[in-house]
Length: 269
Image 1 (cartoon, one colour):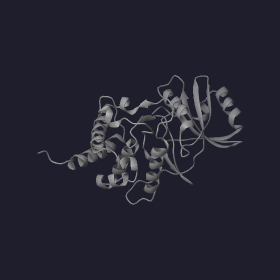
Image 2: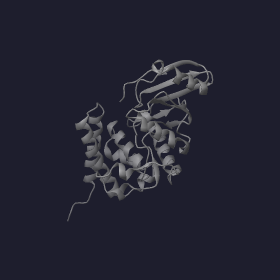
Image 3: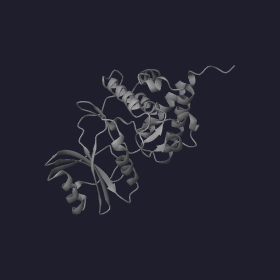
Image 4: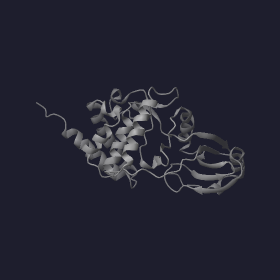
């Protein structure tokens, strides 16, 4: 994650241009965790509260901001609207409608699980076919990990199903669409299923939860098992190359799911 900057660190011309969109800025609160960006702040302004994120235009994550700006107009209402962009003096900033709330609890028995499943079902329904926006094919992103035909499809996917990207206020919303893909409709639910296992669900219960999303319930067994295998290999590679605190638990959860998938396969004759 880039070193987090604060509002006061921005060049004054950049801050002035933001104020042309929002009016006088009364206060700015840095968001300490979550977004993988140089700057993430909540701005209290003369016209209301907004969320602002972004970073250096020549930085390693600039392409993520451009992805998010490009795809936002095509997203469902559960995604906060992009209100404006500012690009000047080496900075690219995105201003979104503010989405207050807490992150959902994924532990077994949590009432938030119904809301997450309902949102995933809505996403697959409303974002299929994929809107006419240029995004990477998931099969290309996972090239060399899985048979492309098993994950190909025509649904716009989020692909980063961390609970930190969900905000539950008056309704559940999904933020940070910086890594969208086009692929099979069940993929986001599969990513979330692994998060449930990490949160304490056993794999059978997590899969039962996932079948609340019709796209996952209808997914071919071969494709889901191959996805679980590829996810283990991908996260094992990440864990070995640049281990972060969350890599180990996620890798363990993926391994448990893959083992469960294999245990359900019929024995060879």
